[in-house]
Amino acid sequence: DIALVPNTTFGINIVAQGLRWRSGDSLVAFEDDFPSNLLPWRLLAERGVEIRLVPGGEPTVETILSHCDRSTRLV
Image (cartoon, rainbow, N blue to C red; front, side, top):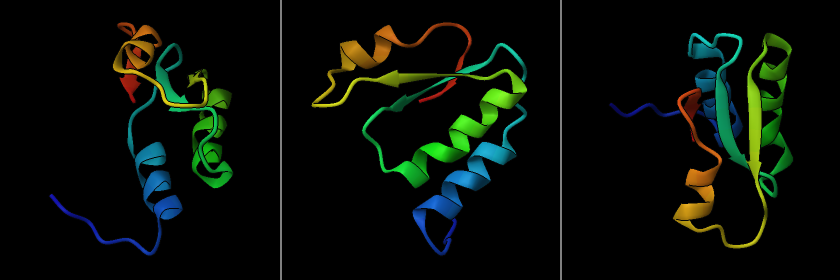
């Protein structure tokens, strides 16, 4: 499916608020991402979602995967 939205932040908010997050879920994001792209994920912490931040620079697949486990619902 393809959805056209006004901007990236709007699209991220649709995903962040559209999934049925449960306390104990986790997601992986990049610590040096643009602030407005991180804020929707940080707000999920209020619902018990753990945000795992991959360090800046040029992350490898291995680095990203090291932040994932069975609780990870989104990268």
